[in-house]
Image (cartoon, rainbow, N blue to C red; front, top):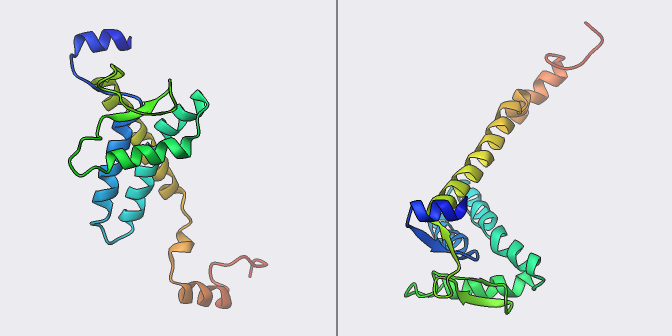
Length: 157
């Protein structure tokens, strides 16, 4: 199926976790411009994208921490020369995956990232819906209600 899509849509991106690392770097840079809680969410999303190269390392039996540090160094290059570097499962290091023909169809990658993002947003929206409305009250008001007996659990008085 992936080969068929690659033939139908001639756009490919570097594989081996290169795209995920580059997106992670970009989102972390954008997060630094935020001053609210959204900065934390953006950094968490960027960290979640790094699961793909980490899992590639673990599946190949390599130390994921070392490989991810090397990938971060390559992707941090100011001239953008490291944007195609991903996990080299043959040697346990990093390699320009575009040059060694480790490609992924861009359509597959776009759909995977969109689906994962939508799933995360759905989980967060369900969490928002289930939240207890009493926990949203200011602390002083909740304490006053508890003392006066309003809204608390009691003996039916």
